[in-house]
Length: 414
Ligand SMILES: [Zn+2]
Image: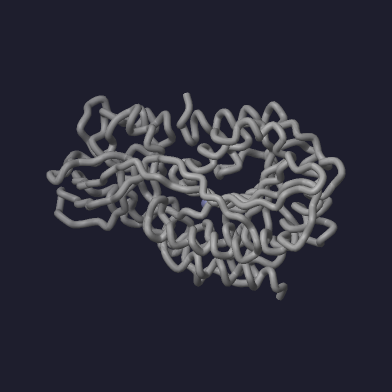
């Protein structure tokens, strides 16, 4: 096993030892580990603060009230809304994914959805449904610990929502009435991105970004998502610290990604004048699973794809490559015209993402070996070339996808 993979594994396990929800004590401790490591390689580390909204769940409870009374285990959807101590009670109505065909005319019912309604469907449900129960998408999946962007609640209104396990949702199809009690609090929190860089020797203003998010979902250890990606950024920083490359390589560990790319959006806003010269973003999000394969999403030109595929072949790594926008921090850069390569590990453990089961026991040094070889090789190639080996242009169809992602899927810009 390569030493770099062993290192990344060891750090990932350390980072995944506790949840790292944005603004939590766990995230602060993870940030200390990251700073300690980067400083030990000789980097000067900067914390770049920004403020965003976070939530805290005080109570999440679901009861069937008719025909019999029973409690169903559930988890809160962050930022969805609140019911007060008295809860909301109503007739259960199955609504699929918020399909208009299933929505009754009257108001005051509790929706039972087979998947999370998208932004437009969510908007239509607010004011009609008093609460929402969302089924996990697989019988094998534990409860999701996720949130919707806080802007949805601010713009559309209160729709207290919870997740239930798939089989519980199937049983709810024969229930008549249910009651949700959801208490959560919101506050503005100062979060920090961690930044370190290796200055370029010949083209220092041309920056190659190597990034990952350090935060996790609420109460989730986030081992594969994304303690492992953060550990890989450190592993790359450790290797490159001994080298001299023509372009600057900047390492950024973002906070608030799980809350809607908050750290990277704050970063690109604060650094907008430098982005014109940014060469590329290499984003590492979801890694480390013992068994899996390497995948990559290219947000950029065909020539970026070919340059990446060339390096993959050079190192003998099979990569499943597609061209798209990725729901991760690279999207914030893509929106400002900076291309990216998003490398991640496809694995059956994807089922466990954003649940408490995404924990360190899923990780294995083997999960880091090929990706560290590939990421390091590609970053070196781009950072040390006399000319960047691809067109910086983002094709029109990908630009449309980026725009749609921010307006509809993430739904935080009109
Ligand atoms: Zn992630």
